[in-house]
Image (tube, rainbow, N blue to C red; front, top):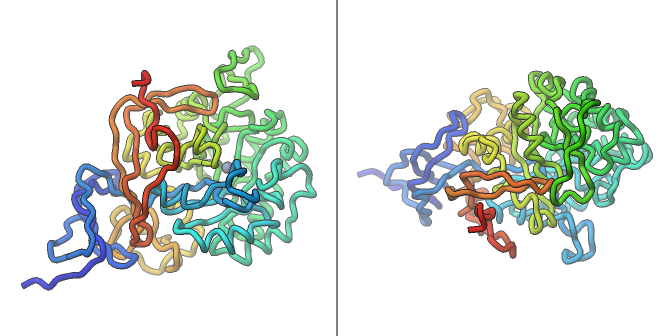
Length: 457
Ligand SMILES: [Zn+2]
């Protein structure tokens, strides 16, 4: 008689995402404590105290969001007057997302609040990028002059908590980029270099449309970013993003709806050659949907130019969550699929790919385990908290997301108010973080998780 193997949780009959092959295959998952102990053909003698029936659902490694703002409660005295930072678990486990990176909400003056008070109190795994501006986006604009950047203190801050603070964030926006030009990304890269971490740059001058941002963009890509550094907002239409400038003979297109600040949509803009070169060198490209940092027009131009970004992230804020245009990481995945990226590829862009970005932060493991979608080269962390994200295999961390796919005609909206119709929308059904089943909760948005159906039906 076969001996019973006791487990805490079994997930039965789901379509499991193999992040190595980008395929979905039917199977089960068995979890004990905070680890996966068996996967795919899990024998009947693995008996669990709790079972989830995932028939008709997709089971992925825990979804990762590389660009969020989750320093909720640090910016305003009350969450009811907050406009930006949200609770980490709202962006995280309650949205089906097990790991988030806070991308520069805080600088040296306030990241202690995030590290010491927010992160220990939430269920979601939260990592942070230190804003190059000392106050972070707790005060916008965070960089108005060189005085807002304190190199030595920033390096010391990162080095004191490199387990959590995994890089530097710098926004190439006015007035900082207009005032400092290329010296702004140089100062950020110098901090990252001296601290031994990566740099994430926000490209696209959403607050100034400045010529300095436009001039800096190719230089940032060619001369400043190194392998492992990250460009966020790859699909921005703003000046200083990944697209070339307006040709002299071209005329701006009429403004579209919802475009109060008046971005010019420009004909004939193409992907910068420097972006493709940077990609070949190992620079990572992230989408970072956000409020105004994602344009379907720009996305199509970037994709036409031959660059499919590495990772999908939401840049979701409290405002964008309830009012648009970035509602959640799950919605962001749907938005990217509406551009013609397959379900499997889009899920890899929110699991394995961001995990690879994070894992390369940490020293490679001495030995690798057989992984379903894992990276046999190792690079899975140092054996601590960050063991093995972005894949599912015996011995990996039990962070999982369960999704329902809704077919139909769905309206996805961009930062210019333009609509793109997609055939698939995703709904988070359950989320397991370190072996614990987390409740899913959108909050009060009318319509819940799904985008509006096309035609208002
Ligand atoms: Zn952001």
